[in-house]
Length: 331
Ligand code: LMR
Image (cartoon, rainbow, N blue to C red; front, side):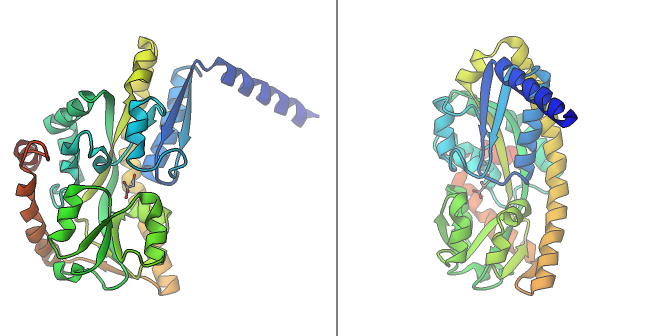
C-alpha cells in the first residue's frame, strides 16, 4: 500500500513536470551513452531541467537514434532537432575550417588543445559557425585517436600502405591517410562496426571511448596507441530554438553548458583511462588483440610525414594558414 502511495505520488510529480515543460529540447548524437559526450549530454539534461525548474524538457538521443553523422547539422538548421555535438569534420559543408582540429599532430597535449579552443582560434571558429545561423556553444573532447587494424599491425608509417582505413567525411583525414599510402574510405560512424567485421575496411581510427563502447577492438587484431590526432566536438543549438527562449532560460542554458563542459573534460580523461584498462583486460583474457604503444621515435616518424599535409590546407576556404599557425603558436 505504502509502495502504491509513493508510486502514485511519484507518477503525479512526473506528470506535473511533464505538463509544466514549456520547451522541448531534443539533443541528438551518434555515440554510446557511456562516452564523454553521452555522459555530458545527460549531465546537461539534468542540470538544465533543474535550473529551468522543469520549464525546459531535455531529451537526449544517443547512438544515431535520431540522426546519423552529417545529417544532424542540416536538421539543426531546420530546427528539427535543437541540439547536437557533432565532431568537427561533420561541419565540412558549412564551416570546413573546423577541420583544423582534424590535422594530425597539431596539438602537443590536451592543455595546448584547450588553450587553442578557449582562445582566439576557438572564438574565430565559433564566429564562423554563428555566421551560418547556428548557435555555437562550447567545445567538448572525445580524446586523442588511436589506430586499429586487422591486416597488419600499424607501427611505422609504411605499415599503412594499401590498407583500407575508415575515415569520417573529412578532406584532412583523407590527406592524412593518403600521406602514408593508405586507402581512405568515408563511412558513417554507425556503419564502422559492421564494416570492420565484414572486412569492407581493414583499419580505423578513434579515441578509446568510441572504440571500447562500440566494441571495434573485438573486430580488429591490432590496436596501436598512436595519439596521432584529436577528436572533439562543437556543441551547437538551433538558432530558432535559442531565439524562442526568454533571457532567463538562455542564461540557464549557458550555465548548464558551462558546468557540462567542465564535467565533460574530466570525463574524457577518466573514461579514456578506465576504458583502456578494460580493453587491455579483454586483450589479455582472449588473446585476440595485440596492443602496441608507439615509441617516441616511431611517433616522430609519423609526425614527420603527416605534418607535410598542413600546406594543403593553407587556403582560407579550406582551413587557412592563419588558423593553423595560430593553433601551433598558441602558448
Ligand atoms: C566518428 O564518426 O568516428 C566520430 O565522429 C563519432 C563521434 O561523434 O565521436
